[in-house]
Length: 283
Image (cartoon, rainbow, N blue to C red; front, side):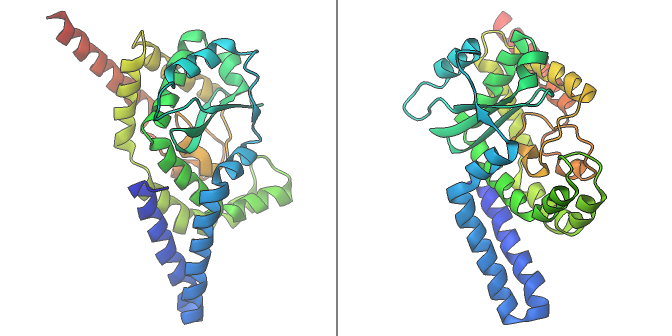
């Protein structure tokens, strides 16, 4: 987790947590706050990926059931500095693809069941190549670090959901109340400092260049956005940044954690880039 944005967010987390505990408790509070932050760093480095996969309730993807996607991923991620990610599936009817990992040689690609059932082949290819671009360029490492940090910070709301028996995104007063303090004081500032939205445009363009048909990516983003608007993907708040687009959700805090630029803007950016490239190569 050497990404500069992650370290900035982590240091801010350490300072604020120490101040929150130190102001009423004095020196002992400062020490406790710093100790909690250090423990989080150790937990995140060693078990962060497992925590996030378990939170998603992901299970290994059956490659023989989805051979085309499996072959595509293996062929596109061959090389000495990268490796094919382990493949997972989440039993959710809303389409989504999620990337988790701390380096390009050891990462995870998670699809929802709805990704295969509700998106056509062109969309699946474009969105899969885009997810692989996150892994190839290392941005997934920063996103995973931020997600693990947010998972830790937003534990109170998760406890509220567990007590009330609600699923992520379900109307839940207890979860909303318990997340009020951590979401606004800790969660939103750290996600704001930790995520680089401008980099997403560059990764979109890079993925488009790797596609045999560059139109597959803007088309895939458009189809995914349409499907998400029809049926929200209620992922745990901490993992919004790991999704390929901002997941629509009924959770009242979801708007705080929109870590990607709006999808229509990403599509427009890709179309402008594609038209520019066509004009350049036509001369």
